Length: 173
Ligand code: AMP
Image 1 (tube, rainbow, N blue to C red):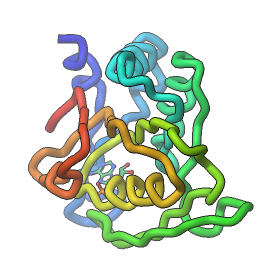
Image 2 (cartoon, protein in one colour):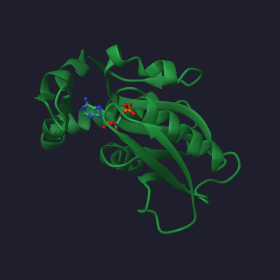
Image 3 (cartoon, helix red, strand yellow):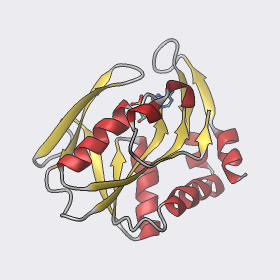
Image 4 (cartoon, protein in one colour):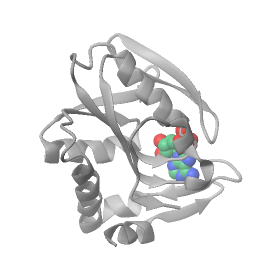
C-alpha cells in the first residue's frame, strides 16, 4: 500500500520534546518531493466527494499539508493558531496535550454560513488538539465534514475524543 512508503519514512525521535515521548518526525516526508506529493494525493483524495469548501489547518505542521491540499483542491484555508498569533478577533479553546497544555484560536469571521470544512493536522495523538479545533470551527459557524491526519498514534485512543466525526489517518502506529 502507498501509505506504507510514508510510514517507512517517518523518523522516531525518542525523548523529544520531553523524556518518555517518542516524537514522530514527518520532515523526511516533506524533504522528499515524491513522498510529499503522495501524502497530499492521499489526503486530498479523501475529501474528493465530500463537497468541502474550506480546510482548517492546525498550527504548525498542519499548515504544511493543508496549504498544498488547498492548492490542489482549489479551496480556501483557515489557520487555527496558538493564542496570540492571529491578528483579528478570535474565539479560543484550551486543551491538554500529550505533553503540556495549549490554547488555540480561530478568527471569528473565518467562515460563512454553509461552509463545509475539513480539519487537517499532521498527527493524531490524544485528540485534544483536534477536538478543540473542531469546537473552534463550529463556534465560528463552519460544519466539520471530516478530520484528516497523516499519522495516528492509535494506542493513545485519540479517536475517542473525536467521536461523531469522520476521522481519517492513512499511517497508523
Ligand atoms: P494531541 O492533542 O495529543 O492529539 O496532539 C496532537 C498535536 O501534537 C499535533 O499537532 C501533533 O503534531 C503533536 N504531537 C503530539 N504527540 C506527538 C508525537 N508523539 N509526535 C509528533 N507530534 C506529536
